[in-house]
Picture 1: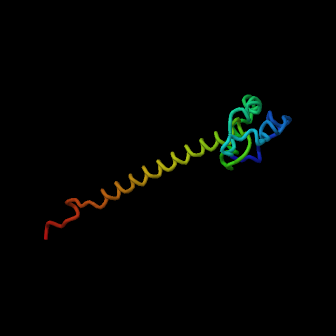
Picture 2: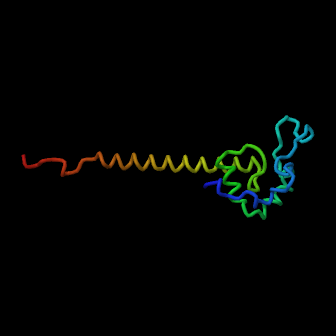
Length: 122
């Protein structure tokens, strides 16, 4: 997709506060183990803007293709986008393995001999 041709000024988020898409995280937002809690609560308000945005699909595609690590893009949080990316990678890997198996099977059949491989007239 050619993202340079998209008029990003048509996006619903253009006039919204950036904190809705890039939440400010404080120490109080972190669970006891110190890891960032990527919860729905952080992005709930921003998702309202995304829900009716005419550029939602393009925004999400951009974020997934470019592996945007932070912020709300196309209505999905970083965690939600990583899940999509992991599923897509697993699918590509499965398809590649299936293709390799088919190629090996086809190659095995190509190596088998049949009667035409022998000259019985001699």
